[in-house]
Image (cartoon, rainbow, N blue to C red; front, top):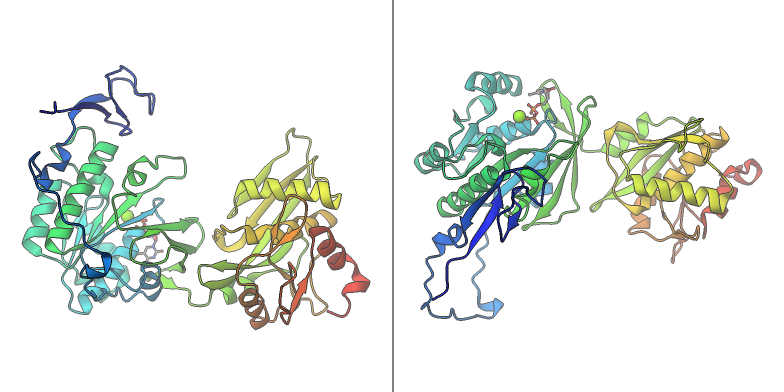
Length: 458
Ligand code: TYD
Ligand code: MG
């Protein structure tokens, strides 16, 4: 008979080791390894050594019931979820503190309650009175949601059993305390135990659970990150607390696409869906040197955002490269391409690049707009058309300075035209696109754009 295996798991980071050591190899903490017997977690499986082999069936014979989704009444949230919440699913809603997780949870439950769905709000973070104060700001619907203020995992599970809600928000997973697991609330062991138990209940009772999880910028991601493989869907709320725009995107979705992004604005009465974010961002765009409109694609939707750059002489070595809303590595690449292929050296300049409105763009198609904004800032020359409108760009820049194709050029150009931004600079298209000013390389695009005589006709 096989010997039960023992492992040593870190109470702080969840790292597993075969032998005990004083210091966890995963996170470097001292005295955090604790013994655990492998197989304990899978006790629900009830499988003995003598169990029969299950019969494999072709996928087309597998029953796939067409489940109706629970619509939260927040159109953008439903879209990111892939058409609403799937009954019995586990959704992790992550984001930094103050971003609006509790608000969106309370609003969604309020709408669901108004459409006669059974709901439950579990608050481990705030008292019932505090939750009520928020609900008062959100209105009648949010006030109708039943709630409990509880941090004990056992009590929360009992409440699920007793109330049998269809949708439950647990705010937050880091505050839950499981007696069975070691560590303080919020530690990986605790968070995992809580999520596993909640998932078991969710599937058994057909309760959709939205787990709220804090993610801080510094990297105490450990908690929610450890859950990503467990849950059905991971939604991430992003944006800056000081700004009113927030984006919600799916990082993982077993029931839908992961490329969809929703844009919200925080107002005094809660989160408002921004149905036409391009209009907002283009409306706010300046035509000053260093500004360039980017035709981005967020999932299936084109989105116009303003990329701003500042180039300032500096004595600091190495100079600063600060990126907000774009990937820092992409910025480094673009700065290198500018130096090597366009003779724009920023070696003795601090460089700041920012996507206005607090939006985050994560696609290589942003390269050209970053480069154009930097070139414009460097030359002190605005990037605009004859009409005074800011110019729009898209395209990936390769290491040899070539402009590379990105997905959906026609939709990007169409979005720019819709908002009065003609002649979009981009890579050449395989089929002609009205309004696209295509160039094979960054250098060519730059020369065509910043030569006033050549641009007059635009
Ligand atoms: P909250 O949902 O509590 O954030 P999280 O749960 O992610 O920590 O709300 C965040 C901020 O939103 C908070 O500073 C107050 C503000 N807010 C509004 O501006 N308007 C509102 O209607 C509500 C409810 C909150
Ligand atoms: Mg909260």
